[in-house]
Image 1 (cartoon, rainbow, N blue to C red):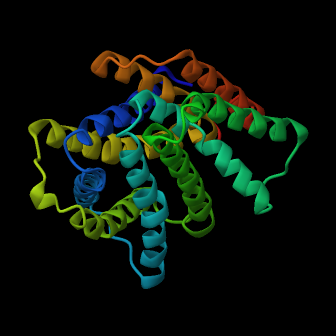
Image 2: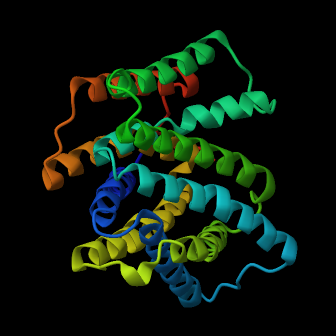
Length: 293
């Protein structure tokens, strides 16, 4: 892997890792679905601007837009909403750790659909991964079902929803231009989010400069620019090497939460992170950093 590509991979991990920080800041002042709506509206506008600058045609056809609406619901509304809601109650670093389970759900669903073979090593990886989730949630469960537990459950649901979206996109949108697919799913997510945000009565909320700054940062950096960089890496170094970002995001999520918000995580969090990393290696193997298509 070229040094420039490695730098871009680390930058992408830093962007997505910082998203959990921006969400934590934003939902401290603005209701979660309203904040998520702001995020995707800003992201949609930036992606549309990039498409206009490149003079690319917008997606066409009712069938395609129908599929993009499904992606908007499963890949944007459910996970973005669940993460925004759940991060109200838990540290942003914990959100990043729990979100790292997404590849495990992707593989588990692929096995159920017959797309992936299940070996003993991979089955062990799934067990270890969900053991990591248990280690992370067990201290809160011992104290009873509280908001912190539901917050962690919400992040796990978001990871599961991301996994469903990935498998759906692989089957229904694999031949579409990636940038247009990104814009289509984010814009459809924005359209679906608006009525949900209106139910939170946004005109009665106080949109502080801190919350708006967080929405602008995650909309531009964590959504639009991160998507563009992600697809650039897919083209330059291939999907296998790009998958290394899965290991980088939670590390940056913990880092930003500690530096900016002063979050201090217990040993349970780091033990869970280690178990999840081990499970990813068991399920997917060690990613090769050479170019692959």
